[in-house]
Image 1 (cartoon, rainbow, N blue to C red):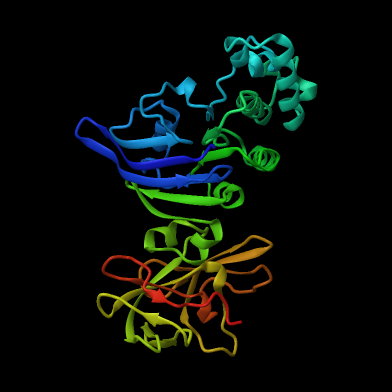
Image 2 (image 1 turned 45 degrees about the vertical axis):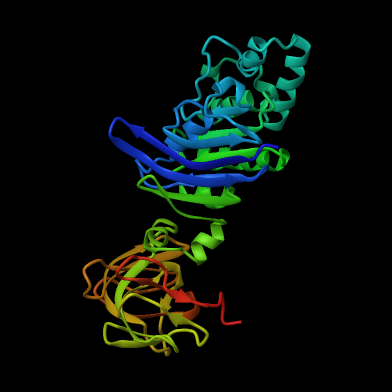
Length: 367
């Protein structure tokens, strides 16, 4: 078994605590991605699993073995770092097989494993080259290959694509997705600040903030049903729009938003500590109202025509502009007053007092 179980894990540096009691179970064969803002503790948690950081309190187990006091080399893990960490004087083949050589495997066994990993990562034609003769994406694949040949129980990736340009990130992300499919029984834990990587690669995403877990779920769960304002704003790009609102009726759920009354789905109920709430709507869920009753209205302060989509920044008199992701053919211009609406099944409501989601029994669609 290669599941990872974290119970009450804490990490402190002198008097500063950076992880505040993490509880998480990663199932065998699962691809889990840690995301969160800089300094939230995601890399620290990964390094604690690897044994590169000592755990201050709690336990970390790989399979049935608590590994708090087990050396990194004996944990059955392989780590892929952000900066490749390749030996510049060694060929690709030697870089990939060096750890096996240190472990005492025969040359024939090393060659078999290296060639198998190279074929998986499309590196067969580069085995005799030196790192300086490779592109950044190829070097990162060599680093991944070096991990594969060890046949670990758990792969750990620490922002492996952050040093690559946009095109190489896409290509290498595809390689990691293929790797995931070719090694279905291997557990993978991945740290990134890139939402696209998280959404496209993860079976489950762990959202961290300030050393605590905000929410754990599949990419679509976090996108469709964020547990609180932090997750709602963090997942999705552009970020979810948040507007002040008030509860007019709990059930049927009815809100007042800037002079407009909004009827939420008939099965919904708003449960909040007071009448003040926050209404959330994603930019991609907004559309020009046309003949429909508008949800929000305002003056266009900036337009970005990107071909496929048009991004409109709309001043609704509430400080931060509303962002609408509209059809690329939209002809709106700066200074124009526009009226926007959205499917009421796509709206989110959060308690103004504590930020938690407070709209219950909301259906995923009108169907």
